[in-house]
Image (cartoon, rainbow, N blue to C red):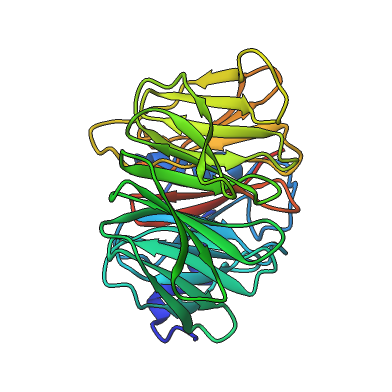
Length: 352
């Protein structure tokens, strides 16, 4: 559904790199962190098909909590406190081409389906939504949770399953072809992050008890507890090959866990640090690059962090946002990173 409000579209004269070149030489200019980031990017060799090395996407009227690339990489979706779901073009002027609305509360997380035809959302209105990307219509409204729903994720393959976790301390399994929950797992504590394993036979969840639990869908029990975090787990992400789990926590660490079936010993393989959580207590998400060589996560200090998974070294600490960075995603085909922030904006930026 096209957006009629022209203010939401990126104008060619307001591109992120379009700095005012008409300033007098002797004019004293104080650049903001955002302008400095943009200015520094203007001399960087190009590595992608982005219109400019850094693109700023504006239009949300509140904190942006979640964003995701379409599987083919031509579009991205974003959502947050204003309850709006926006679709943007990745290339050209990054126009806002579609708007969807239906949730009566803040939308906490959003993901494209594996085939890119639908969006899955969860909200503080206690509901999940399935949206048709082409028509912009909500095709399923799924009720079952008794409190805020903090996280939702779709299965990578097999039946069109969804998993959700909420403040009612439950994890719920859904079949996208039906409206009702098909299974419920009691986590005993509020659940803040969920995902499936690679075969969609297991669910991985994190919550305020600092643990990551791996659930057997068929047996309806906990197979494994991953312990190491000392504060709430705010995000979980399965590696592209399905062998490892990435987790972010309010203890200011990002961890990689070995979730293969027959591994012995300590399953926590790597610990990354440098990013921050703060009093806002936002659910800061995390993600992998497509080849698994990099990981990234949100941070309350307004920077976007990217680490090398082998050396654990911080490769990038990217400035620009004026609020907490809540979600990050790597582009599926190109060296591009997406960030969503409490400053109501999103950034697309080139990396090497």
